[in-house]
Image 1 (tube, rainbow, N blue to C red):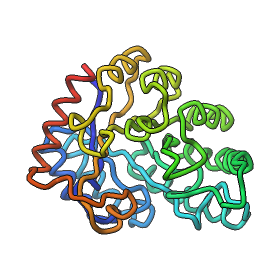
Image 2 (tube, rainbow, N blue to C red; image 1 turned 180 degrees about the vertical axis):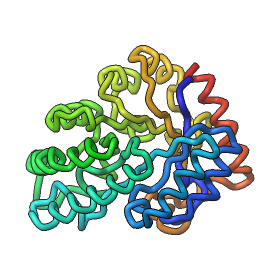
Image 3 (spheres, rainbow, N blue to C red; image 1 turned 120 degrees about the vertical axis):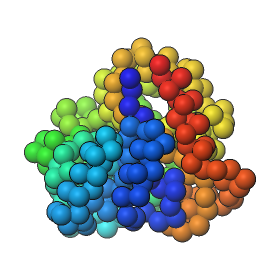
Length: 287
């Protein structure tokens, strides 16, 4: 059975949090995976990391990790010092994840988030090439720590480098490591892909991680994402990786600001109950 998880920030207004309450909540709701902020993990002490991993193990939960690098750590930057700082942070974050047993570390690891191409430029190729050069160095940290970097494909309004599955496939092929994979997200695919199922099939065994959510960032079942098509595509490529729900419903704080939630989608809803309902819905989609 495919493991299904949820991102902790469904419940929070800030990216940094104490993850222990979410271990209990997510396990009680019936999920298999809790996804947490990799940037927070980078700043935790060794004891804190080990305690969180032990708590997750006790609840039979797998941990996965996600992060969007800030601009000061942009590994595609024209500034060599910024790239060097980005690699140092990636190493620290990867070693932290490795200390917790390794696993998937996804997100905007290849540039920064949110980002637009500088107004005076039109060619993103130099950014792509510098990023690949950086990632060839960084992926060695992944190899040493049993971590798989999953390059998240996001829409044009949040990043400019990897907007489609095809671009991400080209990127991971250029990096050339089994520890560099593609991460797709149904919310972003709804904006950028011609046919979502075809993009999943094209990605094939390079797909390392899948985020799921509706076109309006609600939990699966509250929008027009073609779930039957997605389930068929995942079965066709025999996908056995993680599927992690990433809905965002609440405005406010850094999460609401960064994601662009400007109206409260949770009004009148019990968001714990909605998470459980979406989990059951997805179990049906993926069976």
